[in-house]
Every structure is written in C-alpha cells, then in structure tokens.
Length: 188
Image (cartoon, rainbow, N blue to C red; front, side):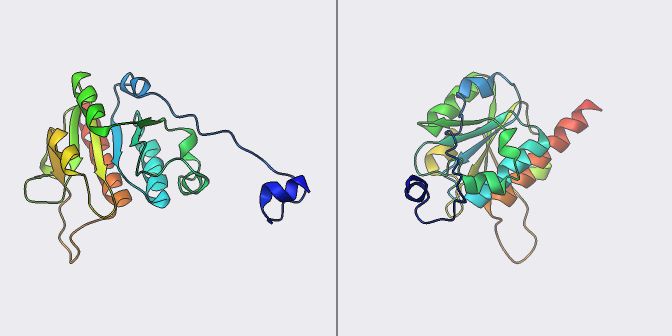
C-alpha cells in the first residue's frame, strides 16, 4: 500500500527510488575554474536547458548559472534531455542574475549577451575575450533589459534565411562552439 501511495498509481513493480535533490554549486566554485560560463536568463523549457547542458559539456565550460525564480531547474526531464551530461556540468542557482554578472565582471570575466538586434555585434566577426560569461535569454523574450544593460558585449548570430531567430538551445550551442573555436585558434 505504501508503494502505491508513493507512486500515485504508477506501475512500481515493487521498487521506488526517491532521488536526492540535485547538488547545485555556489557561483564561487564556477568562477574559480576560469573557464567559460553559461548564464541562462529565465530559460524555462527543460528540453532547451538539457540541450544546453549537453553542449556545455561538449565544449568543456566551467558551468551553468540559473536564476532561482522563473527558470527551469534540474529535473528528470532536463537530465533526460542532457543525455547524462548534467552529471558532468556544474550548475549554480543565484538569487539575482544582474548581481551575478557584476560579480563575474569583478572577477575578471567579460559578460556577453546573445541579442538578435542591430545593436549587437556579429558573433562570427567578434574577438571574444577570455574568460567570457555568455548569457542566453528566454525562449520568447531573449535576455531581459536589465540583464542586457549589465552585459559588456552584445552578440548576434547572423541569420540569412527566412526566420529571424533560433531557439535558446540552438543559439546557445552555436555561441558556445564559437567560443571554443576562438579559444582553439588562440592556442595555435
């Protein structure tokens, strides 16, 4: 009877696992890496978040930073969408993304937000400083005005087709790979 209560009608087959909460890190731990960081400004879709974690692992960044409110957290859907990459990427929750951007800047990071408008510099024509904290905005609205105001650089992905934007996961992945490309080029 107890297993039935715990699974609310699901077929438990006599076993139930109650996983521990995800072990979020402190932002200080991510800053200490000196690696590229990815900040998500109110990304809410678990599929996008999982895909971004997967890309973050693929390019070996220092971690992902999320606001505590109005943002997706690490859930089973995110774990699934990340194909297990969430086990290898540090994630920190913060109370205020603007203050976190200020803290990153004080620690020597350059803050760069993805923005698809005319004020932004073409991502592929930019010389990205290191270390960089890359901000990806929410699925519908992009980065908020307050976060945008805290970014030292605004970047856009050139769009040559019929649509004028990419979803958060795709845009963030393209930007992360450009950071990796530039980092590798600077080593040669």
